[in-house]
Image 1 (cartoon, rainbow, N blue to C red):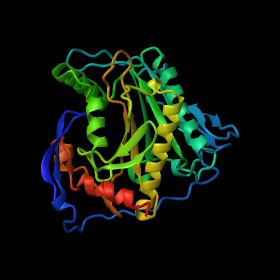
Image 2: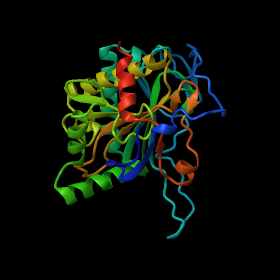
Image 3: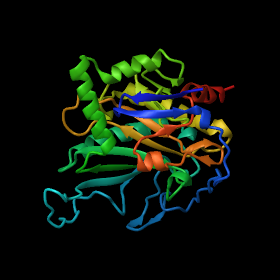
Image 4: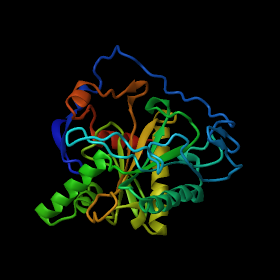
Length: 327
């Protein structure tokens, strides 16, 4: 049993672990894990009809500007604010990256070259979007599955590059800088050393490894960490990009093998804001919302009201469960 507070080194906050509550009686809502079969005529497929036109008959990776962007160079000038209620233009760009032309192919089903092409595209788009006027940060994320709000099951992710650094990444940059000042160490390097010497690794490659971290916020949460500390996708060479892609694909395969269906998740690439952030802890996080089949991890009073996470699981046990899917 794990019943304790653990410090989240990246975010600089406490996480409450209560694994003795994971199997408590539940008569609340149960959710259906089954996902709809993507249609070959969906709006993200080759030839798909979108709000702004029709997709080409593409093959492999396809990138386009979101038809309803959250950031844009044409964003309107907001009404004037003041020192208390401030406003800014939502400058930047928002893009969609389709992983593959086949709507039934998730990351788990891509070949080595296909998944490497996705990762290379992430790196190239990060580099390009960082150079746009007003862009402070590039966030790459994937919402996989209806349970986390995806509006189209065709395999894809999104990029938000705008005039705002997302709060988690801003906090991680601040914490990593403070850790360097206080200890003289790289925060990412110390976390890498600790996790590589632990029992929670679920996948390994030549340049990256994946683990259920000691400080996980969710059951089955996985972090993909570099063996060589870097701050951003743009710091990776070709071999490192490919290694990251293969480890990511292996994690998704483990997820899908866990209970025999495509596990929903939120994926986020944690990379440095634009500018000098040499100690930023680059990594990828995957957050599945399910604690067990049909049962969501609900964000309720402590999380929404109190602002702190409770994890009703033991990271060592969850890592062992994921590794066990290979048997």
